[in-house]
Length: 110
Image (cartoon, rainbow, N blue to C red; front, top):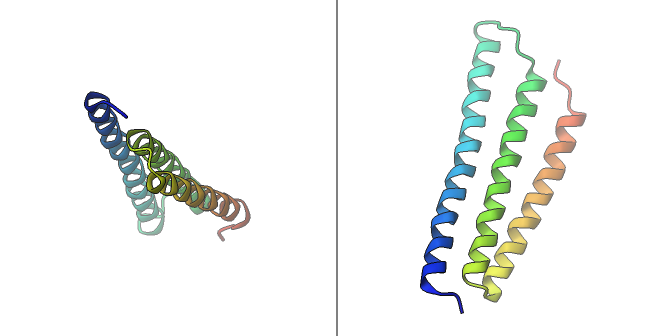
């Protein structure tokens, strides 16, 4: 089906996109933690709502890269198992995106 060279190229891109998604999520978590620390301990003028929105956006953006990884895995090995995995990843991402966005819009900090 797919040549070994193409399979290897797709594998490299899977690793790259998975690393990028992970880095974005970790960056968002570290940044939110630092801003929360500055807000709580040092009484800096950060808004908890804005900290939460930025963290949520980073999580959602990182998850987009995981969808790319799932698509590349399906292209590399177009089996029923890979198609199911892709469907599950997209479904989970959609549900998470919906509820995280809804929560950010509705939840207000004091």
